[in-house]
Length: 438
Image 1: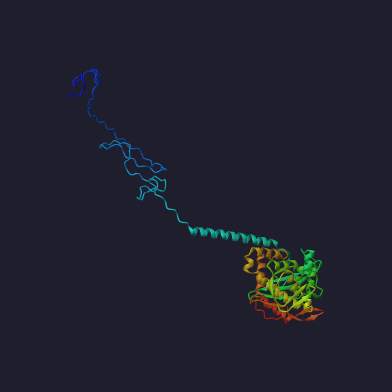
Image 2: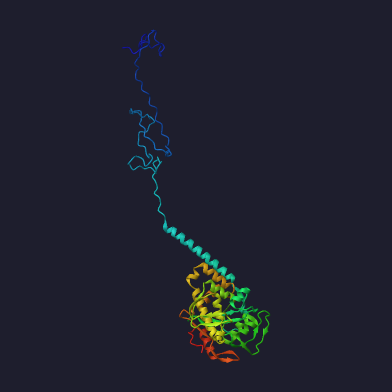
């Protein structure tokens, strides 16, 4: 059978090889075409593949519509496995997807556990910095409030220093900063200037603190001295008078000079507080609990106390330490009350409930520091050491006593010179005090 339509034969290949239409008016019948194989294109090196960005929607695998005839022709369809596929790749197959919507072959990184050690270290460091900053700020704030008005370098002919530290603590009747209402309430009167109302030597040594009261009626000699304001030298005239007269004559410097001259004990620091500051400190800490063994009244100081344990406010505390006439005018009984009260005040103030409570600590420090007068070499650290030594007086290892008295002259109390000498030697050598007041 001929493969060519009518009018054509396989031998007619000389003319137009592309063929002509049939001359018949009938349509040309279908003809069989010989199989023609498509030539295989030359193999090209595949370009480097880039990892496609993972699609955000899961892909549906597609089936190839072609067939592989064994040739190297690339049909363009991928018949391999599709990785990823939304929620972890193949269902139930442990896919490699990095999470929902990750169609790429990405291995997910597990979330790191919190490093608690590092967090604790950072937190502790921040806490230390805050506490340190507050402590330093408080120190400089308190230090700036001290009134360093007393210059002990003006004191002449001073005795040699011994072991330990000696503080001369003075309670004055200064009304500085008090209103007329305050003076009336505290029964202080309106006397101008200031005088010493109480004087004590606090020795802070290795054998425990010792508190020695100096009665203001003590009979002492006023030595030669240099004027605190004029700088003029005043020679000794052999004049004996009450101890508190030295303060009234030329202030703290002459008082220190007189105490050192009559005792032979070197005074390292001077601390003075007035009426108003004393009462404010007591009120700031919420009062001082005291056991009063015997009831007493004193219209001059405003004292009116019953026997037994009770909490004294600022007004009552000032009346307690100033009371004199209720004890037949004896200054010795008053100094005992002063020692007892100051030890209780220090003991109840130097507690964790006060130191760690800013609502009590700052008002207490502010009330005291506003009215404290100290020497120029007094630091806040030295002041705190004095305060804790005062607390130790009643802590079991301390001693409190009056200056030993041998008699009186003209209404003034005369010191026992032999006992005073022995007491000073024991204090200078940091020995246990065995001297008694009587």
